Amino acid sequence: MGPRGLEMAAELRSYSAGLILVVLMLALPARPQAQAPAGADSPADELARAETLLSQHQLDQAITLLTEVAQREPKVPGVEARLGKAYYEKRDYSKAVAHLEVALKENPQDGETTQLLGLSYYLAGQVPKAIPLLEKVEAWLPRPDVTGSYILGISYLQTNQSDKARAAFAKMFAVNPDSPGAHLVLGQMMLRQEFEDQAVPELQRALELDPRLPMAHFLLGELYLFRSKVQLAIEEFNKELEIDPILWLAYWRMGDAYARIENWNEAERALKQAIWLNQNFTGPYILMGKVQLRKGNPDLAVGFLERALKMDPNNYLAHYLLGQAYQQLGRTEDAKREFELTRTLREVKEP
Image (cartoon, rainbow, N blue to C red; front, side, top):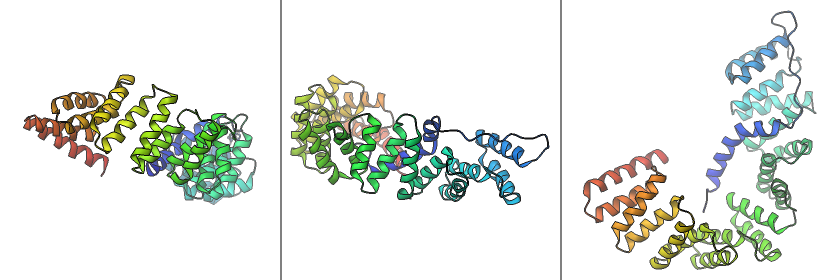
């Protein structure tokens, strides 16, 4: 399978905390910038300085300045919104929520505050509170935004609103929400969120609507392979290849499936097909190295594994298998080096 739910959650949080603001806010009405009057150290002047600090990502300094303004003159418009923004950018979402809630009460039509509060709720795990704000942001945008639609779709999934999730993802990919493609996209997103049981009927529904829909059989095969239902996975990969005979991903995963039941010859055949179709992806090379080791061909295994490591030097599985191949060839020092690299890389990846 691809990246699982926990990895996806980490990626999403990192992505949301940065790029989402850049993508969404281009289409939202901007809050007017505070203009400093002639007098020094007026509230407007301090807000302008805070904006400068925020733009320079000097978050602690901006928070200190804004907090002083809020304590001295809490009625100054915009101070709570800027404090919320500062805490959001600092990824302190609970504090961001506290300030943004106040700011939104002060100005319910503030697009930036609405967006930031929705994202802060989402990233703080308060998904039901995030949904109406994210919906409002989507409605304000002049055209569908893929990032906003994605986050809204994931929010619907996490609150068991599958139909709304399908509609959001359909909007993201510009397809009809009742189309085979919409069911396919929803099935894929369910798999990424580890909702495997719900994904099966969505993928099956997609195939009912269009029996030759590309990638639907492949995703079912991935699901069956993850559940160790290897024969069912192989059947689905074969069905996918009837639709698209040059889908190298299907050959790669079929090679993996055959390797799991130790059918080394069929695994080798499928992996060769994957490599001939795409020579720039490490997965089939690494699996081919494993297959050749099991078939008693360590010299062939070395060639495939060394090729994989040229493309991905930090792949600890490839280093481990290469160490086994060197060991079988009597290259003791080379094997020792590869096993040591394996340990080092695993410690870095899994601290």
